[in-house]
Length: 408
Image (tube, rainbow, N blue to C red; front, side):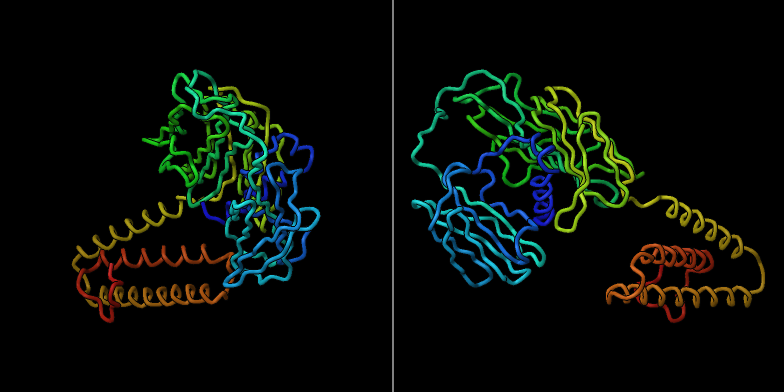
């Protein structure tokens, strides 16, 4: 998943519809949000605001310097009474990263581009060393249950002839000691899933093999992060995804990047709305808890896809032309007439090829009608296939003036 797509999805999750929908989500651990940039519109263009806290959101750190590494420069601003350091009038597109040191602990944000419109807010969360740990991660493991916490998400991104699906799972062990589940935590991906892989940031306890995901216990107290990505084909523009998890999903949430008139349907998602982030359109939906083993069903309609009809039509025409060529070539007839027909085919091939080269050149230079590019290109390629089929059917000898690499 590209960083820009991650940034857009994070923006959607942060503004998932205001209080009525945000109430569906649990407040995450500040440490989990630390260093993640969030696009906003309430800051001046090309501005960055960094909030510094210790332990809890209510514990702001004031008067401490925050460094913004932007390109080859470092700009330093001290946090105000609200724990915020703001950097204004930055160069759009420059790569930025915020850094602060609190009680010897170095805090760094992710790298991100400075936006041309709107600004970026992010938080750096330091460890509150005044509080002892209430958990015992080194204690012997006990038998118990885990759940998929409120920050678990399913993210869907349309791609060529299908979608990329991402499970961002937060396995929650609310006990104070490690827990072993019986049976082992594991689940199968949907039947048509392909190319499943673990994403960066996943726990080393997790593994994927033959489209089966497993997470070996024991689970330490707190949160175990597992992030999986895979591809699902959708050649006809519609897709149904059915997934069962081995633990209760406390707050199901789905984010789908929207293209055109795409629609999302699910009996498990009662709240849904469209929104934008970083100029991209998304569908975001939430619902009530889904118990372990129960299916989560997502249906996505009107996915962008390439119709197979032109391909089959072109193939049928090419075969027909080739057959006609063989039949004509087998007839005793006027050699001069066949030579004339071949010359006309070669001339048509050259005209089509020049049209294709001109179309590609105009696209690279940003000229022409972008909305008609794909259709026009397919027309030219199909016509070239017909011509090559006719030429192959007539004769296999070298063609006069033939370009290197253009012969069928």
